[in-house]
Amino acid sequence: MGKVKMSKKSTSIDMTAMCDVAFLLLTFFILTATAKVPEPLPVDTPNSTVQTKLPETGLVTITVGKSDGKEQVFFGMKDRAIRSGALDYMAKKYKVDFTDAEKAQFALVEEFGVPVEGLKQLLAMKGADRAKKGVQPGIPIDSLNNQLQDWIQYARTANIDQGANKELQFAIKGDAKEEYPQIKKVMDILQDQKINSFNLVTGLRGKDYK
Image 1 (spheres, rainbow, N blue to C red):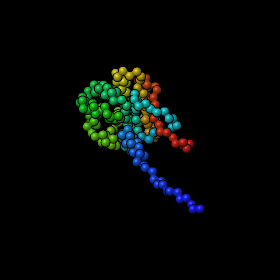
Image 2 (cartoon, one colour):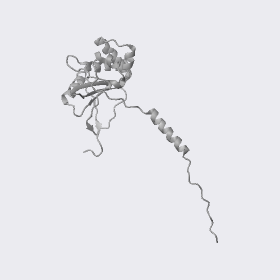
Image 3 (cartoon, helix red, strand yellow):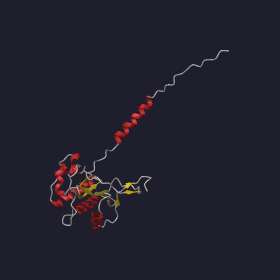
Image 4 (cartoon, rainbow, N blue to C red):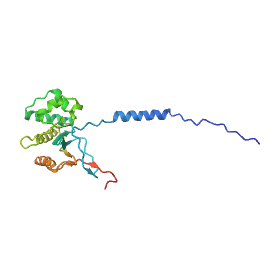
């Protein structure tokens, strides 16, 4: 008896639909991704096992590190409205007139490290140039010229002006190799304004780290 021959069917699969989905997902991730802003003072934070995430709003970050062997302090505010309000107070105290264009540009700067007298020159630069090493000397924290203290005070005042229902949160981001006295000085400035609760920014340890 003869064998019945089975007809062979093509095993090809139409991938058009899958390719469309893949490209749609790729487009979505590209459009929704946020580019990392270059840090004007990069620091290597100490390791920790704590996984608490810092808030996206209502946060002030004080970065402490070294550049070319010099101690530097940078100041960052998450909220644009608070940046603008704090700048107005600083301009009034230090008698520096900022144009509307300069104020609008400052509202886009998340972190900076120059005396208020040097802000106009910094704002005139391109974003990429501001992040170059050595361009920003740091915010003065000397006893005779403690501008960091003023920025902290006016950021809190601007937060109140915005009708916020809670206090600003503060975080200190220090380099792992930074000497303790400089970090302690920043802590003292915070505590002088009755800010006794603040975060310390750290890097997450690997699972096999012991």
